[in-house]
Length: 181
Image 1 (cartoon, rainbow, N blue to C red):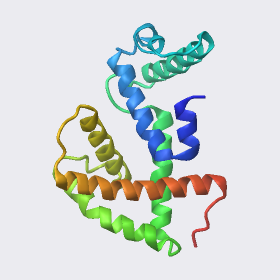
Image 2: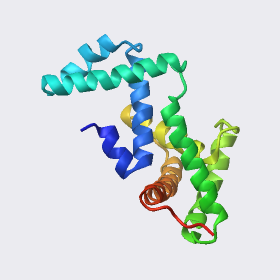
Image 3: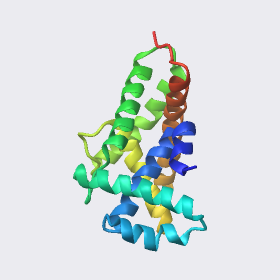
Image 4: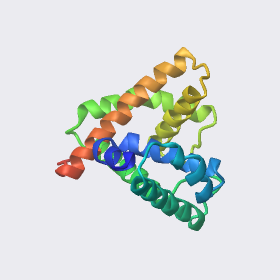
């Protein structure tokens, strides 16, 4: 039913980026469920039952954002857990000799991560999170119809491939645990 549920099953990277976007959407409405209902949910062509389900879903997220102190910035614990799972899977994949294509892609992306950190990305965050922040940032620039340099386009293409591979391994591991070494 919900986009988030479908994405979580099929592509965990897209799910996480979508959920970050939902967090920002909730912030844009001042964490007000009534504003989200009136100005956002009611604009869709949903029946009353679907609108109620959406309102409940957004209401739960608003409650969590308030309880977890991320009304202004940061991410919900449910999203932090997914990120942590991806970080741990990345480490397992890199430590194993069974995933040479993944390791190769990681080393192709590493210079872009280093460059992002030189340009102000948080050095304390994981490399995986740096990649997600870059993808999200470019997604926001595209939504604003802002120009993206060819160098950035190239970096994002490589990061997308890397995160896509990580996402595929995540889904495979959830369906049938991967064997590392």
